[in-house]
Length: 347
Image (cartoon, rainbow, N blue to C red; front, side, top):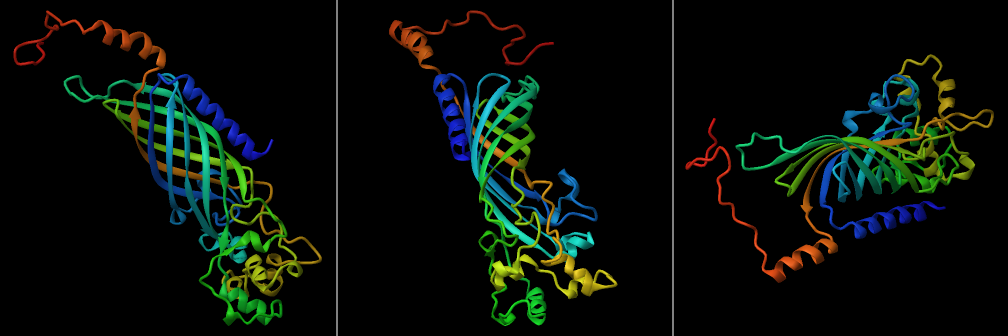
């Protein structure tokens, strides 16, 4: 089964469940926040570490989503969303000398559609004292689901790398003719000799906290981390591609290293060391780590409007009968306990 068919199946099940159980409450809204990436570019002084240990705060980007959430009962709800997550990182932000010498960077825009199950682990119906007229409920919940996304990593040509390769006779194009402000689609140049797919799936997992005002508006904070099934969100995964299969632009994008940046690292034999960051016929020079797929995460604030509805069975058997028989709610002939003329509680 293809990814597209799998996503279509999940969407069909989701829509079908909603149509069968229309008596439950659902809400629609939007979310905005941050986008962060974890992969082969950037990092700290060690090799790849998971979760927050290799995140660069200064490389935080923007994310936004539109969503609809359907609550089955007091514990389980399903959320369908679509949006964009901007990602990016650079080896300049790392203190690992091998990554700094590689000198790679990228940016990417993720278009994702997801179906997520939310399970409430703690809830409080009203968090305000009883004398307040407004009702504010709170809840904590876990998140898990399935995401389908499309992406297209991009990078710019590094001028120092172009000048170095031109001086070494590795490219024939005059470095002054390159546009160094243009972002190139890296997949088109197959920098590692791999025509990877622009589509993939991910498993989102996370936690959230929500507050509901008067059962009408819902404000939430969610942190979600998506484990993907691709290692090419940053276009870096395996080894350097064969320059014979690329044009001059692809060669510079594939190997943006140069002696100037390596000399700043205090390498004793920079002429030999730079061979580790270029294509070699004698050995496979690693460009990334194919043993771990890329991941990305978001931290978002959302606001949504709760839409209340009743099932057709309820409307047919209760509301219509009440209208037909002229039913009215009985009036209370007694005052609730604790009532006085000023409308305040007595103690």
